[in-house]
Image (cartoon, rainbow, N blue to C red; front, side, top):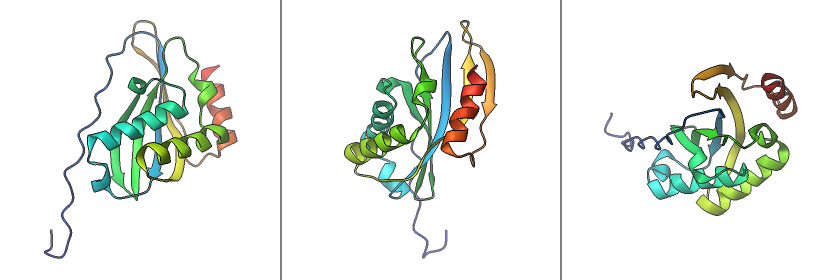
Length: 155
């Protein structure tokens, strides 16, 4: 990089994916939080963010995995994994969940959510653990329409 450019921190290692088998639904989501990439290199801060998302979605902490961090403030891509006995479609980011997620992220990480979480992909796995369906969700869709689109996908 040019001498005036600030060196970029090394990328954060991906969060470990839990070993999962059997039927489940996984939602890939994105949101933007305040700060810079170097603010999120520390594992404990990323763990706190995963915990905040899990709490907002009423999932256990092991059911949320950060897949990627990118500059844009900090764009976070995470995977929310529904337990076999859960019903993730009831926790799709509604206004109530978005408010809860903003509060949880602020309390646990001292960062603000600048762009609310949105679902980008839905993956459904059968009892044998194999991918049954993969749906890409249009990122420009508004909250109510997004929820309707996902409900249709799960029916």
